[in-house]
Each structure stands twice: as C-alpha cells, then as structure tokens.
Length: 253
Image: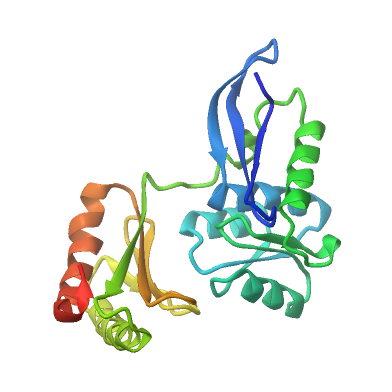
C-alpha cells in the first residue's frame, strides 16, 4: 500500500516513479501505474504552472503531441521541443529566458533552482513534495488527467548492415528527403516545420511519427505514436517501410 515507488539509474541522474491510480476513502492505494516519459514531464510542469506561471519547459524532440497541448493550452506554459541528448536540452534551457526545466523522455531532468544539474534525486524530491502537499486529495495522476495519451507508442531501430556511420547517414538523408516530399501527397500527414531534429510528421487522427539519426550510434530511430496499431500500420509504418526498403541492400530490416 505504498504511496509512491521511486527508481533511479545507476548514477541517479535519471528517475522514474510508480503511482497508484486509485486511492479509496481509507487511503488504500491500488492500480499502480508508471510515471515516466511524457507523464513525468507533465506532472513536473504542473508544479511550475503554479510556482512560475508562463515558464518555459525545454524537452527533447521525441515528446508527444499531447504533451505540447497539455503544457501550453492547459497549464499556460511555453514548450520548447529541442534536440535529443540531455546536454542539448540543458544548454538550450540555459539560453532561453524564463526556462525552469530541461528534461528528456528518458528521465534526465535538470532544473534552474538546482543549478541545471541533471539530478534524478532532486527530481524525486520535487515529486515527493508534491505528493506530500496533495495528500488526501486523490492520486497525483489526477493532476495530469487531461494529458492526451495515445494507445500505440512504439520505437523501432534501423541499422546499416556494415555498421558504418557513413552508410547510416546516407540512408537517413535519402529517406528524409523522400519523406518530406511525400508529405505533400499524403492527406493524413502534416510535416512539422518547427521540428529541429530529423523529420517529424503529424497524423490527422492525432499522434505523430518521426525519424532521426542517433547521436552516438549508426542507427536510425523511428518513433510512432497513434490512436491504434491498426491505424498506424497502413498510414505510417507501411509507407515508411517502403521508403527504407529502397535501401534494403545496406540495411538490416
């Protein structure tokens, strides 16, 4: 019947949590769910919507469409979606006036009040303090009940057969070019012109998909967020597979 579960990676610069979805009149907790990725960003942002109204939250490029809407429309914050990599989001947050938090979906989080150090233990302190202040008022998950979450959220990794960065980059640039051109012909696709990493496409039913090249490895990452797998396959996955299949001789598909 724990109020919260807290997890850290080995050097404690990332954190994740488990929270009860239900708390009855006697304070008995049940139906535990993860608090990570977009959920964690959303809940931390709830704190800043009260303490620093209108503040800027800097995230990595892979955060959801629903998170952007929650931060800007529901909480009245500014959301700056930047490049993957905790050093990238932290440095961008330092540059932007009014920034209070730099955070990745991986759980790397750095706050202005903590000197922009990526410190999972400090993140845990913020969440536990919010829990203490909200005791008796229901689940913390209730505070992000208006965050839209898509049922289908998957990431795929495409690797070059020779394991080289040169081959990976050549394929990525070719597929990116074709993908941008294809956006003009697909009614259910809208190219995200503000995206700063790879190619990100919004889906008309909600959600998105994006391709980006790994910062460290010869890998192309494909992320898809959709209302269902049945919708994602014909609308996003199959067209993308066709584009990558043009390079099948050098890819491990």
